[in-house]
Length: 331
Image (tube, rainbow, N blue to C red; front, top):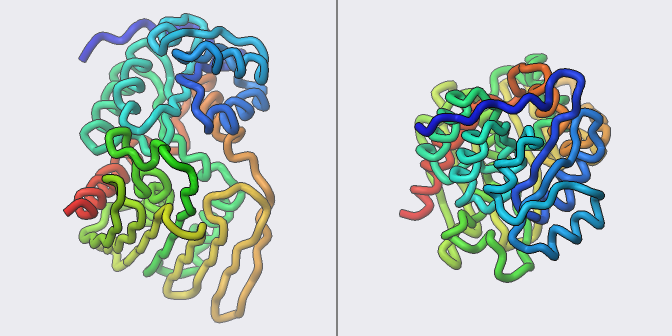
């Protein structure tokens, strides 16, 4: 492995983490950059794009930052501590590794990589270079997920036997990267990775058996369902797609009760329903700032030199499962 560049001295305790953004992706402009601007321990330092007009638009919208005409130039910028990587899925491995070898911490959009081998190279680079790498599952920072975990930890549901989780929407935009196989398009990569991550968070294991049913178009999966069976006796199902009306919902059932979690991956206010022998209890969920909390936590982990909430071992485990499901969907 190529030798890592010396870590920069910025981002030390008490200073904001200086962020660089690779590209002007929609999610960066609409969600992550505003989140950086909301965080006391983070600062927008630089952006890179081969389109000067896009950089100028971002500077007009978000204020001054260092504008770079290439990704390599941003990675060579000594003022940048951490990089947010919202590039197409097919570019995650290449540019995350380049960033980490340049001494930058990396928050990489989900999915972490296209397959387990890429993810393993990324994780090995992070550990070799002594930098932080995290898959950007922002939903893990919501009050909704905090309450779900609290209920699971309480044991009120008993032994978990069934999880059903769905995330789908109607894709009404044409020529998007979501339908381009060479860029890592497809429903499982795009939205199915959320239910898979949630199931992995609960199961804390890899399934011993998987079955997949899938419809494909444009060379990618557009409607996919999977059954995952675990050695604990848990049977989980996930559904994803972007060829029909939107749906986001999770049902978790144990030997003593069921938990219903509408809008599972959102951060708006809502409610959970806990159903047990005692009846049905409605649990209020407060609105959260999932992107802001993610940036603040990642920045704090850099400043405090502490582990991240979402571990690389978890990302590797889920990537192995995702790869298995994708292979079955193509057979």
